[in-house]
Amino acid sequence: MIITELNTITQSQLLDWGIQKIIFDSNESCTGALFCALVGIHTDGHRFIEQAKQKGVRHFLVSNASFIEDNDDLIYMLCDNTRLAMADLASIYYGAPSRNMKIVGVTGTDGKSTTSQLIMQLIEAMGERCGLISTVNIKTGSTIEANNLRQSTPEAPQIEEALAHMLDAGIQYAVLEATSHGLSQATGRLAQIHFAAGVFTNVTIEHLEFHQTVERYRDDKANLFRKVAQVDGFAVINGLSEHVNLYVEASAPAKTYLYGSANSDLWAEEIASSEDGFHFLLKSPSESKQVHLPMVGRFNIENALAAVLCVAKLFNVSAMTVAEHLSVLKAPAGRMVLVQHAPFKVIIDYAHTPGAFERLLPHMKETTKGKVVVLFGSGGERNLEKRPIQGRLADLHSDVIILTNEDPRLEDEFVILQDIASGVEQKQMNKSLFLIPDRKKAIEHAVSLCSHGDTLLLLGKGHEGSIIGPQGKMPWSEEQVAIDILRDKGFLS
Image 1 (cartoon, one colour):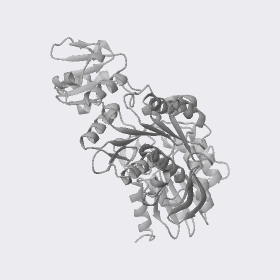
Image 2 (cartoon, helix red, strand yellow):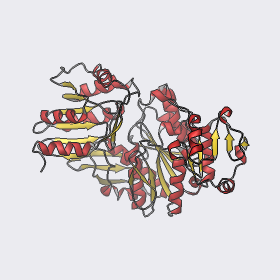
Image 3 (tube, one colour):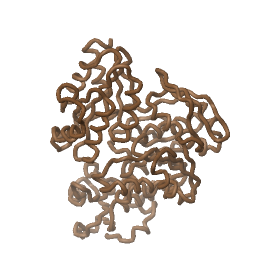
Image 4 (cartoon, rainbow, N blue to C red):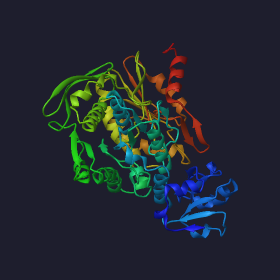
């Protein structure tokens, strides 16, 4: 059977066909699966239809009619774009759960994961259960788990299924990390999600291998606020961003609230750092409150402001009421993790973009008595333009640079490191600039260079559990490797 009018398909029809899940990876093929043949950059899912059939699949979503076989035992749904149609079918199959929940989307180049988790924590501090889908974690019930998908915004069926599980568990609120990939019309991952609120952190340069231009990258992020406007939601936008107007305009006519800048809807003054975070005066046009944020990294103040303002508007209460819970907030795994405090600091962070470097490195330089030693790399087959910019920023705001593997994938690891090093002008090779592809050996060397009062920053991997190279994924834990090395050298017991 061939179906071309997909808009007539209903949830009951999909269930009557015996469909038990929607898949796009032929390795998950089984009886009861609906296989969606996605056309990607490296491969075409239509090539795996026969493999799916052999494993019992009888229902297929295709965009290439030449793969349709005349067989009464099979059902083919023919469409123009399998990604967008997959999003439609997933929403239908799982009962469009986002329409029955209050979903907060968080977008930006940096700060998405932390802001998402802070919003979730504050919602729960206000007495409501909250789900989460982010780069670091996924929470669909009572426990929070690691996100092992290596996708901040998963594919549409995974998102719809997760939201459906949340609803079944009685969860009415959820926070989704809304990446530029997920918001792009080319992927359709968030095409059917209804957002009650959208939060914008910042935007710099990233993912140009996908978006092609900076303008398209910025505009794809604005799709979140266009979606918010469609359902009469509200937007929370960083007033310090030079691109604030793009996202304010995209939100119209939805209610828009700004944070960060003086005299916006929420900002911070009298900021004082301490060993365990920051104390500052939280201000709105009508109120103020002294607060403590137990998180290192000055940029986390902006993330906290966004989270407080969002939750305040979500619950229609004063920001100062929400801010009472700031002192119990925790950063997600791999974000500004203080592995060792003395005799020198060792900090792990996921920072891997120029924007993140601009926010993190000057602060570390300002607060470090000794040297700032920074170790990082750049992803292979991704965004070549950012590499020399990363090098230049590290050159400006650190004393020693160690370049190493992040996820080289199939690209020559030395080419990646040399691309980064092309932006470094003030460091001397093998004295203050080192190229060591093996990440464990690079960390060992970095530790050997540190002395009392220094800060060692291990950047780019954060929470991630693998390094992707020519042989595929190699298991990796940045924190455990750092701890083991520090113990071997006698710094940790």
